[in-house]
Structure formats: structure tokens, C-alpha cells
Amino acid sequence: DLHCYLSDPVPAVYQGLPGVEQIKQPGDTIPEHDTVVLLDMSRVSRAGSLESLINRYWDQSNVILIDHHLDEAPEGKVGFIDAGYAATAEIMMDLFEAAELPITEAVVHCIYVGQITDTGGYRFSNTNARSHQMAASLHETGLDTAAIFDHIFGSIPRRKFELLRRILHITAFALDDSIAYVGERQQDYADSGATREDLDGIINHLMH
Image (cartoon, rainbow, N blue to C red; front, top):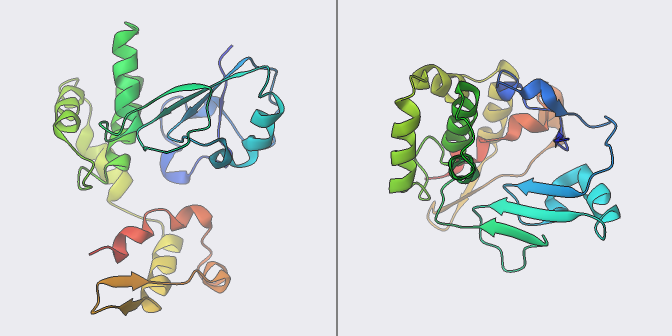
């Protein structure tokens, strides 16, 4: 059997993804397993609350890494790590095709979301020709890319807006404005009603 896990609850912005109801949440019972596949990470230490479970079965389990971030000392027993991919979702798409698995509407939807989030909407420097070629193939399936893109990037909940406003207010600059830095304050979460997941992406507003 195949089971999918996250060490944290699924962020609100992704709760509409197809298949999300199959993802086990923190606190759910985890059955025995013989293989662990870690996506978008090359170290078990990045698995959050699942780290202790993976280490417990380390001698009995295969630990496979699939990632596009280079690491000098990846911790899996076997894996595929290739920085030539701009997103782990792109690797998954190639794996689907290599295994001749059906590329369903749900697969296309999830691959597209994985690609646009990992590339910042094709803005980050990791975006390459492969990214745009794959994006074109996803678009040609009839996927409503505009609606998905708008859902991911086009709006934010009020609590995240309030957190962003507070963070920008205390942002400081150094070295002729070439560096922007800010300290995270617990009071900002209390005042805005935000949670840790609302911090995702805010760093992009400090990049220039």
C-alpha cells in the first residue's frame, strides 16, 4: 500500500488539490513500511516530525530521495537529485512518463501547482527551457492554468496580509540597501491571527 504523509497540516492554499484527502496528517496512525520516499528534500532532518519515525526503521527500510536541490551529503540510501530540474514536480512528471502511467487531469493539476510554486511563477533563476516546455505540455491538456495561477498567487487571506504588513514595517536595510533583513516576532502572529504557514512566500517581498 502507498501512504502519503506531511509533517504539518496541508496549507489552506493547497487544500483544494485533487487527492489531498488521502494525505495523512500529524497524529494519524502510520503503518509498517519497507520503503520511504522523500520528495523535495535531501536530508531526513528536514522531514519534521517524521524524522524520528524514519530513523527508527532506517535499518529495515529503503530511503529514497527525489529532489532538485544539490546537497554535498544527501542522507538517503538511494535517490535521484538533479539540479537541472527547476522543480521536483518536473522530475515526477518525467517519472510518470517513464513508467507509462496515465497522466490524468489530477496529475496534471498537481504537477502544474508544484512547478509554479517551486519556480515562483517561472520568475526564479532555476526556471529553464525544460520548465517552459513542460508548462506548454501541461497547458495543452486543457488545464485552466489561469484560474490555478490566480488561486495560488492572486490573493492572500487577511491574516497573512496583516502579518506581511507588520513584517514590512520593521524591515531594515544595510550595505547601501543591498541587504534587507527582518526579525520574526511572536507578537506579530498574535496581533494578526496568522500561523506559521502564513510566513510562506513573504521572504519574496524582501528580495530586490
